[in-house]
Length: 290
Image (tube, rainbow, N blue to C red):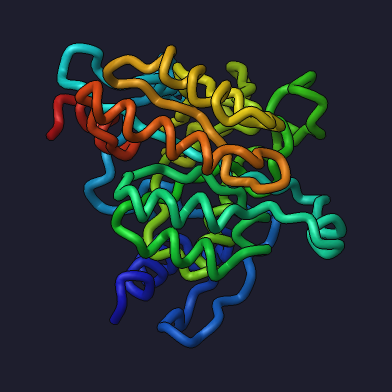
């Protein structure tokens, strides 16, 4: 039995009546699980579907979802490049018309430069590009984390994004994990990035039952809609500190110069003595784990 099949079986035992994150039954390679409904009533938490040793933060006050912004500052020059693979639920017609929300050249460059990275992926992106999602998820350089299903905002007034109602926030996260499973991603991480980075106490409370750690950042690359790769690189290089989490994008149409910027960022930071790591390593270090 594969890891994916074992996880599906464990989930079925936990919540036999639910198909929120993955359909119960056969999920061996070559077989297609049933799609998850968009409004599940019971589901497994993200931590139950993620790698057994994935570090997370303890819940915040009153059990709220914990928020992680950067790793320890004084424990070596480690830095995490993160890439948001954004696609909003209603952008299907634009993709059908030829707009590219993926960026295979960026992923190839990260592989060429041997840079570990964390990709925060929307479920809708995984549905549109299942082969890319599966390839990224099965590459040990990378880890896939949750960026919602819809890329709708979890607060009002968040950069003009449509919003998810509070009673649907949890199911939106769970539906993304279901999309990752269906695409063949073996072990999505128990980390969540709010669309637009926008959250409030109500959103943290709504997601507390999922078991995720919310991951923000402390370095904004400015690559979204940028046309000057040098400016993006300078912004990252100027902001980088030990333990930093850098937010970038893996969306060709909305971040066309990211790959070029990465080619300038990586050698400069290595020259400064930085080591690239995934978010999980920074969270583990914050927990005192190595």
